[in-house]
Amino acid sequence: MRQKMAAGNWKMNGTSASLDALQALAKAHPAPGCEILICPPAPLIHRAAQSAAGTAITIGGQDCHSAPSGAHTGDTSAEMLRDAGARYVILGHSERRSDHHETSAEVRAKARLAMETGLATIICVGETLTQREAANTLDIIGGQLSESVPDLATGENLVIAYEPIWAIGTGKIPTMAQIGEVHDFLRTRLEARFGPGVGRSVRLLYGGSVKGNNAAEIFAVPNVDGALVGGASLTAEDFSPIITALD
Ligand code: PEP
View 1 (tube, rainbow, N blue to C red):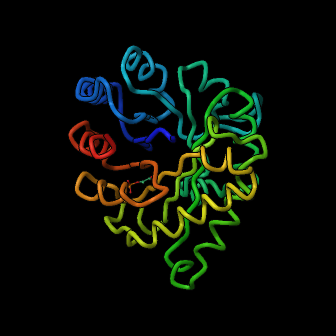
View 2 (spheres, rainbow, N blue to C red):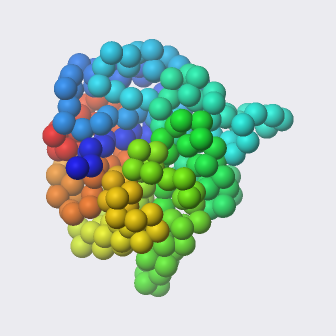
């Protein structure tokens, strides 16, 4: 039985005042029926982890480097994230892949080190609108999945987020049949590569314009184990109904 997950990606939003939203969320969901993860920007992780201590909220990072330490100005290592109190890290988000030209090979190297450091990873895959319209969605996603996920993946250290790039922050979402097709495909691919035990235990999240008013419909799709949420994770008011839809 896979534990459902509501994961919030704050992206480059928030200051210490945003920790109030964390507290409000914790108060609203003292014993949730799903795992609640908040991934604030790096400077807030330590304080967020302190603020979330003793609540049902877990804290994660939004990226980490593929090297354990060294001359990489501005970067954050997996060990630093763990030391700051993070338990997860998002890797290969489409904004990292486009803004920082990250390849799947780099995502895999980051994921390997993150897993070895004791962080669980949320590895993102997703197609552009052009790729979908050209009927290339499954090819693109299959390639990203096999190239980005390292061999040491398990049900504990790997979560996959399917995030169609054209659905992120746009208010547009795929049809439920399209979401179902991709999630079934991901499950089949994971089972083929890692065997049914691991393949069936990896959680699959949908991400892209998830809101309180569409969450329940999306969560009813087979193989959708929760959501990775951007904009609607920034306030307790917006994120709370999504968590409730997973209860
Ligand atoms: C995201 O960037 O991971 C995301 C899903 O954003 P939004 O929910 O704002 O579409």
